[in-house]
Image (cartoon, rainbow, N blue to C red; front, top):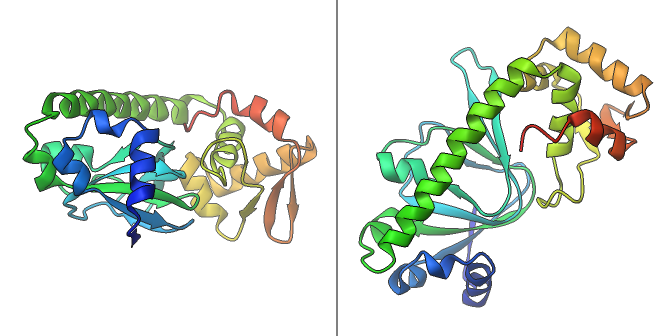
Length: 232
């Protein structure tokens, strides 16, 4: 991530997302703006961080990796997502890896500044309780979905979750197929079965294969098949 020195933009994001209500005036003065690009790793499992980040624009993918190297999507997040809240409360290394799905911005405030807050401390703690509770609920739902939903639903949801603008209105229309094994791991299936599902969706006219990519050809039907976009 690249730090951006733009006080006006910071103020605009703080106001847009109502963050003045949970930060003290001192914390606001210590807020820093960071820009990230699509595909960038924002933090990795096991990394030690000392800053809480608030996603104010863009979209990120949160996932974990097993000791065998398999990847499991935890969720996709859009504003106002928080990174580092659990690490702030538990004082532990980063639990999940976070990757940028689109370009975007985050506001960062150091842990030590947040811990010194007297003013707005109750508001901050209430906000964190709500955020962490929602995270645990979402992760529990995602685990259940990965076990209960058919692979074609999971693949449709994964494709739709790769939103290029981070707001859910524009959808990523291409997906590299050079590493379908990784994609199979992400949605919890085998490489062979994933290929069968891709052929099925191609046959139904929802996607097509072209020059090593998957192209979405019918967004409306893919949304229906995703059954509410289970990864968000």
